[in-house]
Image (cartoon, rainbow, N blue to C red; front, side, top):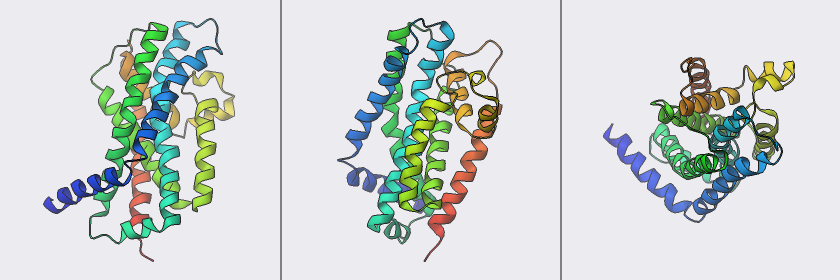
Length: 245
């Protein structure tokens, strides 16, 4: 256990130093995206009703979390493969889970300022009354870890070029065709059925309910689905990182 903790600390420090020039850009981009969703999407709906305002307010932080996990992470892994750094990291005498945990921690810390700024912008823009409950921290952590785990799995399953292309498709799919900023009832039946299996709508639901404390209570189905996707993503990533050429 001590070896794992020491390895985790050293790896986290190494990642921070290695990405020192990139992290500020990621912070700015995520903050701009969160604010842009709240402000820009509102222009598409001139007469905002309370439900639409709520979905936009809680959808902005969800999209921010998803963007880091499903877009930035696959692109970074693809770049590491092309540069040969991926094989170097796998050859390090450190636990594979410590390497993955260091990456997860770094990206979680990078995305949190954008999440907070998006919520603040939503409160000021829409005057919504958010009521964060005790599950807000577990919900955000689970969504962030699940998105990052799926992103890592995607990057390990696909070739670098395909992983980058897939991440670009995902960002448009999340923004335009996923029930994050609008209810799932607005989707065609076939697309709604697809999202019943995918984790995106459950991520949005978990974040939304943790921030609003619904009268009917928080549904536990999203947490179960996200946990399953998270474990699957971590399993694929762990197997890929442990495999040697």
